[in-house]
Each structure stands twice: as C-alpha cells, then as structure tokens.
Length: 205
Image (tube, rainbow, N blue to C red; front, side, top):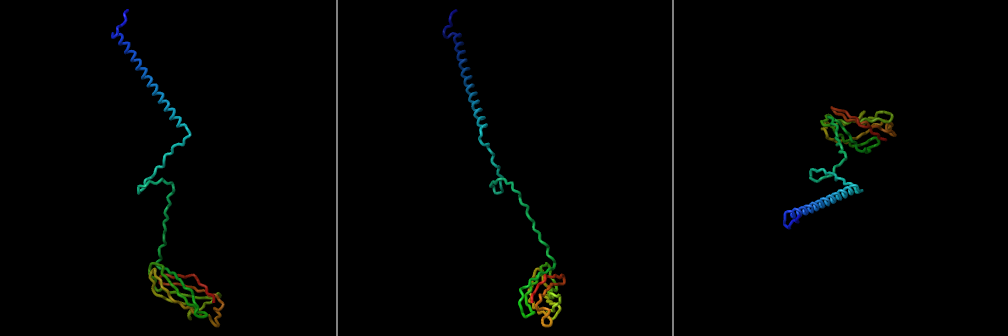
C-alpha cells in the first residue's frame, strides 16, 4: 500500500474531520459554561429570596382630588349633618319684661313694662292687667280699682312697646293689709286674639 501524497483527496478528508471535531468541542465547552453561569445565577436569586430581608410593601395608592393633589385614602367615618328645626310662629303671642321697681311712697311702686308681640300677626286691643293680693289672699285694690288695667291698642307682630306703670296699693286702714306683708303681683296680657298670664312677682312691704 502506498501512502497518500500530499494534496491528495485522502489527506484533505482527514484534515476536515480533525477541524470539525475541534469546532464541536469548542461549542460544547461554550454551552457548558453558559449552563454553569445560568445555574449560578438561579442559586444566587433563590438564596437572596430565602434570606431574612424585609418584604417589600407596596405603597398606598393615593386618591386624586378635585385640585389634582393626591391624598391618602381615609377610613374615618363621615359625620351625619344635623338638621335644625325651628318652631313656627304663633299668630299672636306676648312676652313682658318689667324693669326694677322704684318706691314712690310706702305702698306706691313705679316701673316700666315692655310688652312684645312675638307672633307673626297684629294683636288688636292689647291691654296689661295687674292684680295684687297679700299672703292671706286678701285682694289689694290698685289705684282705687280691684285691679290695675292699662291698654296700649294694637301691636303688630314682632314689635314692642314700653309703658310706664304706677301702682298705688290701697292697703286699708293703717295699711294693715300691706305693712309687714309679702304682696303677690299677678300680671296678664290680653288682646282680642289671645290672653297670656305671666309668672307672679313677690314684693315685700
């Protein structure tokens, strides 16, 4: 058997086979290196995931407002508004505010009385009536009459009127009905539409 001469077809086939084997070995080495790198990366990732690091808490999602400035969502309860109601006005009603009394004699007293129609309509024929009795329930005449009465006419709704009042009590002989007594003053406001009795006042003589 004769050896193949250089440059013959047999020699070329051997060289091609040798180069192909080297190429396959290089590719296999690169693939193996890539597999090792990927495996190492996976181990590092899961190692960090299993450590004691604090979990990541997602931030609170802000709620956009009408002005465009976000605010954190609140869990506070919204208060229920209170609806205030007012009582309707009476057609006619009265209030009476007396001033402090001043002495005008042993059994004489003077004061100013302010009467107000707190209703919504005009009160017609308004009068103030005052009656007096002592602790023994004996009636004390006022200004020569069983009771004092002063009329002011009509009073529109929501308006007031102040009247000066002089009370001269008739206390009988030697003032026996009044001296040393506590007198009770009963005051009433009347009109064609309504009568209102006010709290009693006590006067020591």
